[in-house]
Image (cartoon, rainbow, N blue to C red; front, side, top):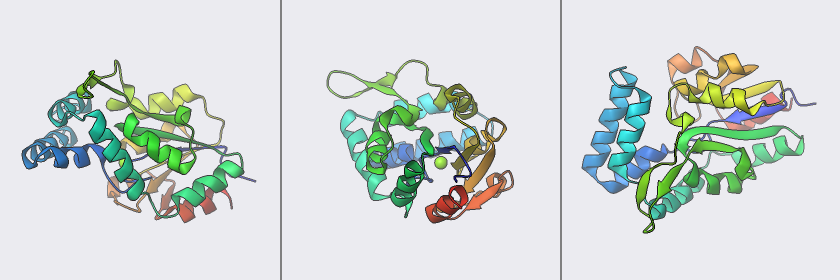
Length: 214
Ligand SMILES: [Mg+2]
């Protein structure tokens, strides 16, 4: 008997060992990477909102359709050890597995396909491209590009309880009031402030499997 009916997974530094927007920025240029890092730091310090920083970073990185395909392949190359087997076991036990990410959806879809997660269960940030495949902005309103996005999206999904949320960041820990339990995933990055808010701490996907399917 599964301990949780639904599992909400973060993507960057949880399902895969890279941070997608940083990865894209580094490929644009060293200057863009440095600007992107500075914007992220401004948001962490509270000098800028996540909302304004998110659009600003993308306007500098300007991810093309081609770059998104390369990022999709990179996500798969850096997939967390044991994630594939864990998700296969959870789904076989009829546990609903969804991805809720502040990353870019088009690049996360190949990773989700690799892991057997349906595209409809991948919630992330949508962007638009022009006819030449160049970046043309956010695809309308994108709640997951905002500070309060994850709890709001999880609430709107109406997942069957008990629900377990898993992730490495502060925006993942923010889902805690909307779910039955929050697990800090520390397989790639360990943040003390996130671990402090967690009901469980997971160093790998084998441990997630054991937590959900004892
Ligand atoms: Mg993350």
